[in-house]
Every structure is written in C-alpha cells, then in structure tokens.
Image 1 (cartoon, one colour):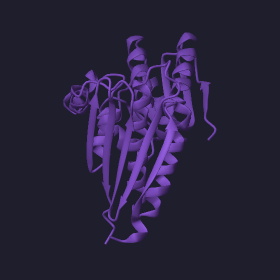
Image 2 (cartoon, rainbow over the protein chains, first blue to last red):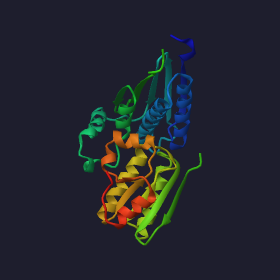
Image 3 (cartoon, rainbow over the protein chains, first blue to last red):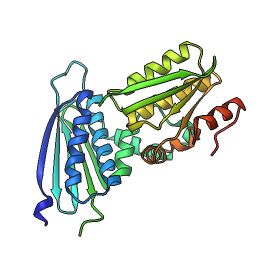
Image 4 (cartoon, rainbow over the protein chains, first blue to last red):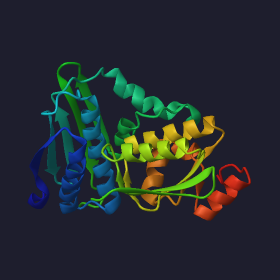
Length: 148
Length: 121
C-alpha cells in the first residue's frame, strides 16, 4: 500500500445541521489527498453529508449534545468512511425500503427518504446497520479508479 | 458559506426563485419558507434557477418535491432551470429527472409555462 494514501482520520462533530458542511469539507479534503477525480470527491462529499444528515434527522431534538463520529480509513486505492452515532437508531427494514424507492413510479416518490438512495448509488459499497436503542453505522467505500 | 434565497415575481402567478450556495439540512428550510411565502402571495408557478446551487442534498430534494406537489394541487407547477451536472446526477439517481420539468433557460421555462406547456423532456 502506498503510505501516502494509508492512514486513518477521525472526526467528531456535534449532531447539528450547522456542522454538516464541516464534515463534508473535511472528507473532501481527505479524498483530495488520494487520487480521486473531482466527480468521485463530490460523490464522497454527498455520501458523507447524507449519512450525517440521517443521524441528525433521527436524533431527538432534546439531545443536543449528541455527536457524530466520522472515521475515514485511507486504504491505498480506496477510502472507507464510517459514520456512526449512538442515537435511537431505526428499524433495519427502513434502509431496504429507501433503496427500493428506485422501483416506484416517479409521481409516487415521497418528499423525503432520498439520502440512503443517493449513498447507495454514489458509493461503491454501502452498508447501513441500525438497531433501535443502540445506534446507527453507515459504512461506505469509494474505490479510486485512477490509482495504480 | 453564505447562503441566500433570491426571488422575484414575474407576474401575479409566477416567480423565479434562486437559491445561492449549498442547500442542505441547515438551509433547505429557508428555501421551503420562501416558497411558502410566495404561495401565500398567490404564486402558483415557480421557476427554480439552479445555476448558483453549489450542492443540494436529500432534504433540498424533499423541499422541491413537496413544493411541486403543492403547486400542482393549485393547478400550478415548479420548473427547474439550468441544473449543473452534479444536480442532474442527483436527479437522475433519484429518478426525479422524470418528475421535474427541466429547462435550459429562464426564458424557455417562462415560455413553456405561458403556453401551458409540458416539460421539454
């Protein structure tokens, strides 16, 4: 593995909308140190933004001290990003249901629920593990097609 | 980091809305609020100028979808103008590209609305 693109960066941000851009910018900066092209960097930004948004939307409004933990693992030709929180979580079926939105006729699409669909489409690998009362982990992988 | 939502009315029914910056969970409510203000003023046709949207996430999409539905209930419509490549990609992934009428220019959108026309697609 190229040591220039190996390592781990961890970021903890308050689970509040004001900090979403911080997470997006930080991960984009990390991705830009690798050999991702601009489109791929935008994909990663969107994936991380949506994962963090998901955490905030599922956080209770009274729990203002909640944090989002973003871990970026630079693994040579791929970037693995894990977004986790210790929030209320949600039923795992919700992930499958959201991804299945792609099967709906356009006029039946709802006002919300596009975040996980975007992550699944923009990242090369995506897992959403959530358990009510325990928290949520979104794990995303983006592979760098330009890397040797 | 400054975000703004510019708007101007074209006629009693039609307005142009131009979000400037990143539309996400923090800023999407401001877009929603401005659309609500316009509809309260009797506007039922909104053209969203996307040319200065730097980033639009799922909450921004939700606001646009919600507005489209409400405006169509009022026999109006919502049109997108000049979405960049990035926004087009998001619209294609979510299949919302099939839902929103999309135009290259404001003039094209206005002409289409005036003619009672459908999407150019």
